[in-house]
Image (cartoon, rainbow, N blue to C red; front, side, top):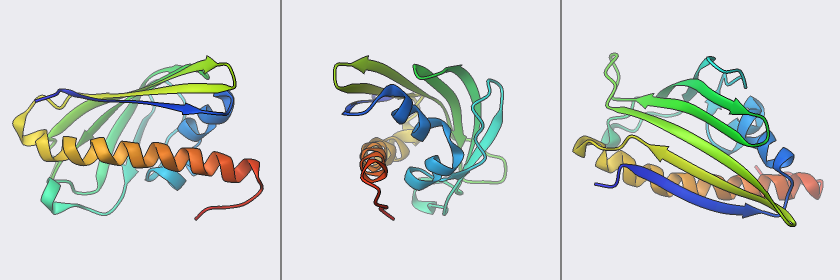
Length: 150
């Protein structure tokens, strides 16, 4: 089984604009999940959404900010499971931003899916991250054009 999800996406926007969607809790909620994120190393936070019993997911992701280099890199732990304190996914999300001519290259690595019991979650999240990164692009574009996408 592949132990990590890796995606790369080009945004025709500055690293600062992309960074805002990765580190502002209100903006993160628009493309990912409700959260109490703060861009501070060591900060414990949660993402919350509906439970998905078929993925052994109770709807809560427990996270801690591991590294933060403004406009360049953000990483946090990502732990979740079926509930009752049981964690079946113990992983790490790393976002890396690279300035390019006319925009920003965004790299996502979500590692830690080495157990067979993580296969369904890995598959769902691999597709989910692609959709969510696309939502970031749509949100930035709408914000630059003064419209809102809900």
